[in-house]
Image (cartoon, rainbow, N blue to C red; front, top):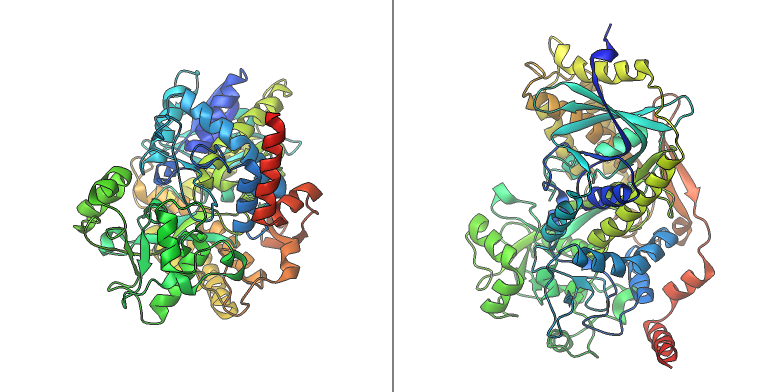
Length: 619
């Protein structure tokens, strides 16, 4: 019998799992509320996917174009998300993002500047105005640096290379702790907390071609699911249109949207600027339809419409995919992204230093002289843990979620740049509300020893078997299955095949074996993460099969186009009493009338309204 008393127990008021922008923002706010705060991370501090968000953080600061306003940012986000976003979350984000960005500046973030000394902002796909506050093309890195530097002085405890295994709940069904494993030694630790925040990111490692690194195994989704929380919108997986496609060793690595924001154009192998052929009707009135108008926009003409390369990511990704399928792809199966003909070499090196360096080192290509080869890469989850918009708490009391592992903010498709400001806004709200919740809990719960034993037994069984499936080979099978059957374009037949194959992989996983001891054992770590990936992958595949329409990042070739009836439903996933995954079509609440009016207004009417409000405020 496992002696629980011998396992080290650490207590905090608020415990955060994940140390990216969302987790750090939450920790800073919880600590500021006077809470004993800890952050558990399975990698190292600073090794977060936040650093991959290179282009900037979206906020209606109106520093570059004074016409920008939270209402227009709200409208852009709702339209980009195909109106499946949680309306209140989008409102909170649009209203709070400017103050959170300015606060980040107060904490030491060194932004690029306008000639007047204000935070500079750049154009990005789906945003009407230049809205992305940035630091060259290293914005995420600067954000993490700033949050870490500020947070380290707040008395926050950090636990690096510590893998969270599963959530603990008390007799009332409230989150009260988590069992973790130190990756170096393989020893277990129990964390007790009055409230817990998941900020664990996404699950892109379920696909073969992805911008995500090894950490992204859907841990938050799976742990929340196992604990009885609801998942939502998992069918919406964003394939970023521009990942590197060559050489194979770097396939999938992100090519920031800033390249297109700074004027980069997409060409097929015939030299045609093909995005003009893929402008959706909804965006036609706001998108340039000639190269001449697009050139005027790049030159700064405020009356010119945005180039089609800056359409939303789902549109651009599908367009590249269609060009490749039609035989017009680049040499290595993507499209050509050319900024060399649009900007001077000095401009490119100054505004896109990371991209210049990335291609020089990894592909031996000079982007100031040659086009890049790019293609869609699995990048981001719009879906995740279902949370309350105002508090960010899940359906499990005491469990909060923010950042990419939470659903609702981005709807069916995320606009570039909204991720970083999402981390700031909802990380802050999670920290604030988790602290409020913790203050009402007078004492730590008495932990259920049998829960702890079960979690540890499940983990160590992988080491104790005499033989079994190889976790690396199973992961490879999972990646190939998701890439082939649950990819950027989906059909019923392929999705069903993918689900059937997932069931086979799940069955093989019940025998998974990692050789060696618990110390320094990457095979064991791979097997533990694979459980979470399998739950995540199944949720994606089953939700994708259920949603019989094409909306945003979810494209069904057998159900082309958006279906009005599906706008009224989210797909919610829970673990059934029989242990199987259950899907429910949950009717969406009616939006606030004023928010709906803003989102549906023509851009001309909304701009006139805002101008009138601003003029009235002056007088």
